[in-house]
Length: 347
Image: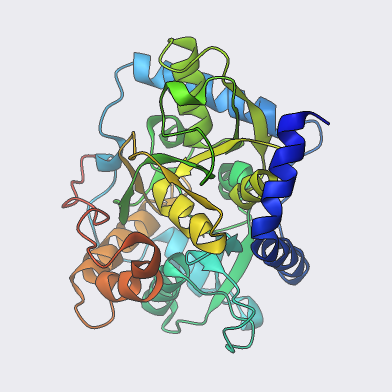
């Protein structure tokens, strides 16, 4: 074990309570929810590298404003929605891929007293969609989906949609359809408070950085390293299926920093007072609801639901922000609000 890792492991005991909670929560939820696992022979690092290369290819082809490449809102039912409504008995539910361990987004609070129900900002949105389509906010089958399995789960038909802090980008638009944005965020660095890392800059030299496989964070890191915008000595090889795994590795001293969406990083920092956000967000990204490419009626319906969700002043976007995210992102939600939607996809 290196001296740096030994010091880091000793330092990590400051967050041992949060680490134990995170690990226990992950284990409990893994048993409680069905999970779409990583296929054999598809390690996270390979998935991350493939996503990064494809993303750069899309950029080279001139893809811009991916958050605008969606369909206009509509209330009309189509074949996808009819198929969901025609499910019988206990199967008449909206099947949604979610996160099960992202604090304040999609998680089960062991101290919440809610009977172990999933909760968080993304979960509120799922209930809203289910209520509109099926008339029952609880008509949902949640499926735990690792970060690198979100798109495969949609394409294979294991879920109707994914609502899991999923960034809209050009690469993913090749495989799935997205709703209009429902949240604005950006990539940010998370590191121990005592770390010399100060942000997404030269202080990442000789540091080991963890990201989730298949994430926009990994794609950005690899592109910037190859372009010389990131120190050549920065080690970005560590990728994991889920973002919480990066936090645990950081607490164990196995990595020096984590790069992920700032909205997620803020929630992770709230779980462990020994770590903090370093520097400002260095990208601008938007979360969207992901669905099958040919599920046009479902995309249009979700976009209409999002219009109402943003406008609702009593039980809508702002209410969900206040309840779940204000404690970690601050009372001012203006920086997290998505832009006015544009619907530039013709069909």
